Figure: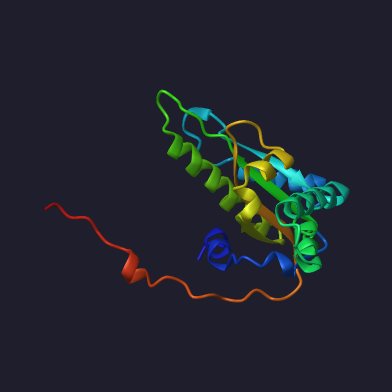
Amino acid sequence: MSEALNLLLTRRSIPAKHIGEPGPDDETLRKLLTAAARVPDHGKLVPWRFIVFTGDAAVKAGDLLADLWIRRDPSADADRLALERSRFSRTPVVVGVVSRAKPHVKIPEWEQVLSAGAVCMTLLTASHAAGFSAQWLSEWYAFDDDAGRILGLGDDEKFAGFVHIGTALEPPFERARPDMDAIISHWSAP
């Protein structure tokens, strides 16, 4: 089996709460993002972009989410607010993958959205290839307009997800995988 295929067959998501230091340095992160940007992109539209959350900026982003949460739920308890504050600082690096799909005369928006999803998956795989662990999350703030503005979305942009990157604090576990016979079919003429 080739190394590349083995890499794909051994990739596992590690829950963000089990990812810690070290994370990729700036040069390595740039390489990971460069790899992620090499996905299929019909029409060369680049219908996605990256927002990187690290260090003090990641802490501030979490503080702003907690502020938004408490405005909506003044009775929120300390545990909930602590969770919101830690959203972007629980791992060394969080990359917000932004989908900026828009109407195009030749390329359907759906195809552009799929390209943004491919960016997320490729970033997970590139992180694994570089020796890091990662998880792709899309929690409430990925779909919330106010949170999106706070986190840097422009008009007509959406988060495809947030990829948390760092080093596994515990070994990966295998989860149940699909029964391949149940999901593979071969088309034949009627």
